[in-house]
Structure formats: C-alpha cells, structure tokens
Amino acid sequence: MSDAAAASSPTREERGTEGRRRGLLAAWRGGLPLLYALLGVFAVWQAVVLVFEPHVSLLPPPLLAVQTFFTLLVSGELLQHIGISLFRVVAAWCIAGLIAIPMGLAMGRSRRLERIVDPVVELFRPISPLAWIPLAILWFGINETGKIFVVFIGAVFPMLIATIAGVKQIDPVLVHAGQVLGCKDSSSLFRKIILPASLPAIIVGMRIAFGTGWASIIAAELVAARSGLGYLIANGMEVLRADQVLVGMMTIGLLGVAFDMGFRALHRRFAHGD
Image 1 (tube, rainbow, N blue to C red):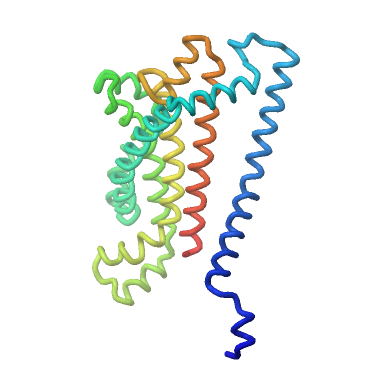
Image 2 (cartoon, one colour; image 1 turned 90 degrees about the vertical axis):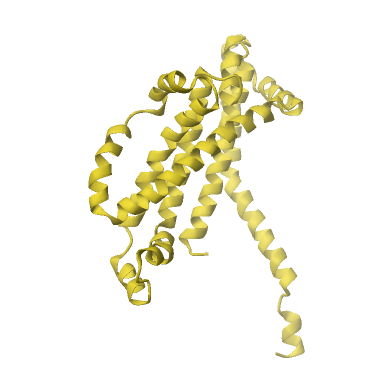
C-alpha cells in the first residue's frame, strides 16, 4: 500500500469514533418516538387538568408529578424502591431461566418428554400470576420468597414456550450437517447446533418473561409488601397522593421501555450472528 493510500484510509481510532457516532445517532433516532409519546401524554394530561380542574388528590398537574419524581429521586427513596423491585424480578427471572430453558431444549428435542410434560404446562399456564398471590401469602407469608414465587410463575411459562418453539424451528438439515461434521454425541450437538440456532427465540422468550414478571411483581407488591414500586403506588393511594401514584406508574413504564430496548438490541445481535 502506498503512503498516499495509507494516509487516506481511516485509522482504528477514527473508525471507532465513527462507530460510536453512528451508535449515538441510531440511539437518538430510536429514542425520538418515546420522546414524542411522552410529550403527547404530558400535553393531554395538562389539557385534562386545565379543562376539568380535578382536585390535586385525584389528578395533579404534570409539573407537580415531575417535582415529586425528582424529590423522591434525590432523597433516594425512589431508587430504593426500584432496587428492591428489580432484585425480586431478576431473582425470579433467573430461577425461571434455569428451569425453563433446559426443559424447553429437552422438550423441543424429545416428543416423548413433550407429551408427558405439555399437559401439565397447559393446565397451569392459563392461570394468571395474580391468582397465585393469595396462595403465595399463605405459603410464604409477605416476605421475599412469596413475591419471587409470584414473579417466577409469570416468567417461567413464556420462556419455556419460546424455547420449545425455537428448538422446533431449527432446520433438520442444519442438525444433520452438525452430525456429519463431528457432533456425534447429544451434548456436543446441543452445544454447537441446537443452542446457538434456538438462541434468538430464547432471547424473545426471556424478553417476554421479563415483561410479565415485571407486571407480576407490581401486582404482588400492591397486595403484600412494605417496599418496592408497587408499595409506593399503594401507599400513595392510601394517603391520597395521586402524584406519588403517578410517579410510581411513570417509573414502571420508563424502566419497562429501557429493559425492552436492551432485549431488542440483544436479539438483533444474536439474530444477525454478530
């Protein structure tokens, strides 16, 4: 390569800077719809307050809710509730993954196992996680175990169904090619062919499971908790603080969007084989 060509070609640092610039631009473009949605919600909210003039205990102005949000954030109370709710969801979500993903891989590959386990799954899957809250209180009380159990119920079935579907959608030609190229035993076939090929579907299941688990923990905290975002909402209702209720709701929505964006990015990465 000549000196002129070498000088004109971008260096590694320049390529890295350009990549970061493109990433920030893509993130900004991806966040614009969310920004527009927030502005639209606040505009309608403010219009309702101006037209109907409800009492502040029923529907406060948007600026008051924003002020309450930053007050709770600066005091650390909001972060504490967020951390507690996240711990419960992540713990139950991880337990669900440790059970659902291996079972889904096995059921997707074994029709006999699927015929045995599937009726049990279909019997319990339609039952809402909220219906388990009374039993969770009776069995575990109002401590952490009961809340994690409710979230586990909400997260395990979407993950299991998505994993089974991901395994069944694998092209048999790909499995046969893996066997021909050296995957003689089941463990190597699962590790090198089945798991990588079904990973995009598994990530979709993990994403859905996290969303259902997030909704489940809020419901559980509304009923039996002394901490967490659900408790923050329930406490605001008891003391007639609609601004506190709305802060809890907004926090749940924003965190849900953030987690969903992370799972979408993870899915795109594995779906494209990056």
